[in-house]
Amino acid sequence: MIERNEYGYCSLIKAVDRVLDKLDVYNTTHTKISGKAQRDEWRNVNKRALREAVINAIVHNDYATNEVPPVFEIFSDRLVITSMGGIPLGMTEEEFFKGVSKPRNKVLMRIFKDMDFVEQLGSGMERILSVYDRSIFEISDNFIRVTFMFNTLPSDSVGKSSDSVGKLVANNDYVESIIKYAEEHGEFKSKQIQELLGLQESRTREIISKLCKEGVLIRRGSGRNTYYTKG
Image (cartoon, rainbow, N blue to C red; front, side):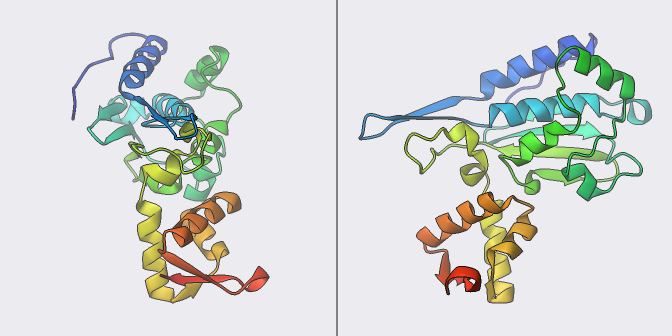
């Protein structure tokens, strides 16, 4: 852990601003100049996804039962956000990832919405999962933890902002999951990987295509009969 600071003992609105400002300092912007005089920029963590995760942790923290505030930890290779209390009672994990709105602290949610910290209810999860997959979440009955591995490499797409494709290079969990699935099943289709990782179809195809180019996977067949095996 790089450092430890206390941002409590003040209004939650002020605390949110202080936490976001501090995390922004460590959310380094990287720049790479290509041979074509084009610049590729990206951050350690996608800025929009990070903001949503911070606000979610503060708004949905279980203050009544645990009396413990959210914790934001910065390590040399990752940023970890932990909020107390698991998924709200009566909500399934699938509903949680789909962004079904069931605020734990309704008054607090209303205040944050009035202050424009929160936009459409339930939209925060959609913003996070548009960049990262579900593997960054650790959920138990007592807490929800989000781990953002730092994105230290640029996008493979020239001119495309890496801040919008953090998952592809920030977290190698999908590689391990796909390889393990290939070893266990021999062959598979992209739809099976989509369901495995909980991603959108376009994102799944992007990941599989990259792994095929790197020789991790081999594409076989064509059209609807396309399937993949381990390289």
